[in-house]
Image (cartoon, rainbow, N blue to C red; front, side, top):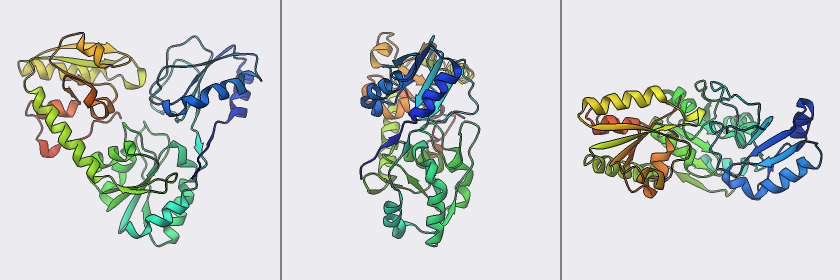
Length: 327
């Protein structure tokens, strides 16, 4: 299925004019960067403001840059309610044109018992219709309300699956409608419930369990490798939406109490080269929770999540492994 997205150009132009902006910065997810020039030109042709594309990666609504622009347009994400930003930010969620109902019809035989329904910003505008459809087919559906990091019910982020956790004890499994395993893996790790992925673009259906099992094996190996470390770096993000300084201090105290040396390192973009230059044995990330998990293969040294440090130090049992979330 061909998929397009609503860039809401008229809304952006209207906002730029109403605010009297002189300089506008456009942020795009990596997968949308190819569309950035045409969108920027379409806006620039109709406003007097200077329109600039941010060439840096944008990892979410947590990743608002420090800039002299009057307005930041963040594409592909929704606001984080408990995060205040110093700049004026317009969030454009990029509503998908993909029709979810063919894949929902296809997934029906795999659904049993009561399910929790989840999706991303791109499909939230049809979440209510998906609930109606599934219930019309005799499926019992629950949609959870998450914590204050989530903008909408049924929404899942790569760093927060509290909508799933809210209904986990009342459902048998979860159905995630969206593309890829990124968000569904978070749901699986947070709830330990079966998660089925229904991709409205490809029409494919998959079970996340094998991905989860492979990831847990990888994490076990990273923790074991970190047992050889004597000096730890604690990554502290300079991105406002990923900064967890209190947690970083707590981890530092835990490592000190265990007789291990540690130092906090503030970074905006975390790369293998930046970490290697400091010559430390292992790292703990209090930045984006997905850094350690999704990018583990590119780091020569072990990079742990905060709950994994607890396992390393004997404060948590492996059987009680939990996913690191930003609340």
